[in-house]
Each structure stands twice: as structure tokens, then as C-alpha cells.
Image (cartoon, rainbow, N blue to C red; front, side):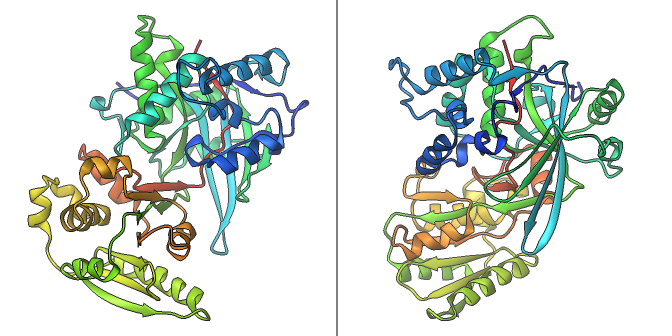
Length: 433
């Protein structure tokens, strides 16, 4: 079986009735309660009212999140705020943004692809998932019968055949800049020649799930729930965003934050059993410069050996940790496959968090006493504000490691990677009914 890509018989916003800047939203899983309120205040038609309605998840409550989303979806369609496209199409997206003074462009496209079980090894996961989010997304899918957000898939094509075939002189379907300053230029691709090329290029590829593991597994669960015998049933496909790993692909780490009390120097002594520790002392005047120094050293050292940063509450020092000891024996005790033993997060979770601090696997999965935070600044701020005891600052993941682990049939710890920028919700809806 090969990757089967199809255009979407899409539902989109009627841009004569809304301003896209007012209605777009990031993926549901990065929206805080405060940010949700802000998004809702921008427009009564903001997409957050579909992906994360501000209601209970209790199915016995008539006004639960899923019923509310369905009512909004139905009303917006009836009012013409949402509308069907004239013919099935693929949405090609150019994302322009700036990071550390460098201008970066990422290209990709949104289409449907046939859902495949992981056993085919055509679509590979790289992270573990949690039951709660999958149940939540499945309830939403059952009620609204639509994909509101995309799975993020990565493939490899050094020739960049798709990128080279797109007509960039056409008028964009959409041009909107999000709250992080990322410009999203969207083209509708509905000509058979370009669609056929896209289908052909992907037909012999292996795709890696970069982001949206919960969404993909939810799509699998919904397909199994419907259990249709029609090979062309929409429920056998899921809306995905595809991008070429040969393009500018920026992957951020997800940092580990300990919120359960631990005496800082006791933790430091545990760390020193395995890591060489370099102190970076700071005061109020040079703290920002020393923070930058820490981050630069993490990246430099992680290219040579497993390295990470540590910031402790009530200690005016940053620590650079460089793995000294061979910890394979400990990793063997936890049945860690060999392909994962060179991963910094595996060493941190198994050696420090599990063995030395006594966190159970269940506690780590449920984020009980530990948090997984994508934003670097927030990982530092939680210590400064006294909301956490310790922050482990991780190095940037490498796409080669992710691919190697996935191809070996293994997965990284949950919340290991953060592919930047996130793809907007609200560009397109894929109906499943």
C-alpha cells in the first residue's frame, strides 16, 4: 500500500463576511483558557468556538463542548459564514517568519490522505499519546463529523518537485498573519495536472507524523467506529498538512518542569552522579546575557554528547549538564531499546526523573508533578515566579534522530518535539459526513 492523497471537498470561511485575522486560531492543544477568551472576543465566528468551545466535556450535559461546537458549525454554514468550495482542491501554504534575526520560509500543503495503520510503516509516529485528548477529539468528531485541524506530516523529496511546480504568481486565496507574526499565504490548487503531480510524488513516500499524533489516532478510532465497507468513505481519510523535510524545518524542544517540591541541592547532587556540571552564575544585571550563554552552550555541547540546562528555584545560577557516565545499564533495566539510548529526554526521564526522583511512568504520563512546556521563556519564568522547583532546558531535537527512531518502529517520550511554526486552525475544514 502507498500513501494515497486526495483533494478536499472543503468548507472554508466566506471572506466577504469575516476578516481572517479575527477568526483564525492556533491548534486546540496550545490554547490556554485566557487565550481562548481573547480569541472569542475577536469575533463571534472565531474558530476556537469549534475546536475548543468554552463548555464542559461532560457528555450528560446538554450544553457540553461538543454540542456547542456542532450548533456553531451548523449555524455558521446556514448563515453563509462558512461555505463549500466550488470544486475539490488542495491548499498550498507558504509560511514566512523570522527567528533569531533570520527570515525563514516553510512551504507545504493541506490535503486528505487515506488513514493507514502504523503496521504498514507508510505513516510513522514518533511520540506516545495520551487517552484523554483522544477521547476529547473523538467526541468532537462524532458530533460534528468533520476534521477541524490537520495532522502534520513530513516527507522527504530532495528534488522539491511539488515546490517547483506551484504557480506563485496566482492570486492567493488567503493571506493572514497570526499572533506570532507568522505570515500564512494560501493558494487553492484545483487543476488536475498539479494535483496529479502531488499524488504521484507522495505515492512512494514514507510520512512521519511531526505533530498531531492525537488527531491521527483519533481519525483511526473514528474510522473504526464508523466501520464502513465503502472504500471511498470520507471517514477513511484524514485532513493532513504535508511538508518536505528538505525545506526549512524548525523543531523546538519541549522542556521538562518539575512542580513537585525537591530540595535544590539534593537534586543537584543526584544530577552530579551522572553529569559534569558547569555553573553559570548571574545577577540581576547580567541574567539575560547569562541565559543566552546557557542556551548557546546547550546547543554546542549537545552536538558532541547528551547535554541540557538546569535552572533551580531560589538559586542564582544556571547549570550546564553534560552526560559523563555510561548509563546504558540503567536504561537496560527500564527496557529502553538501543536506538533510544542516545536521546537526551530518555536519559533525563529514566535516569533522573524515574530512578533518582522516583516518579512513576503513570505520573509522568499524567503530568503529575511534572509539566511539559514548549515555550523556552515560560520554562525560565516558572522558576522565577516560584511556580516550579526545577526546569530542565532541552537541546533542539534533530530531524535525523526522529526519523531514525521512527523507522526502527520506536517512539520518543510524549511531548518531545515542537515543530515550529504551528499550522493555523481555520484555513479549511474537511467534512466527513
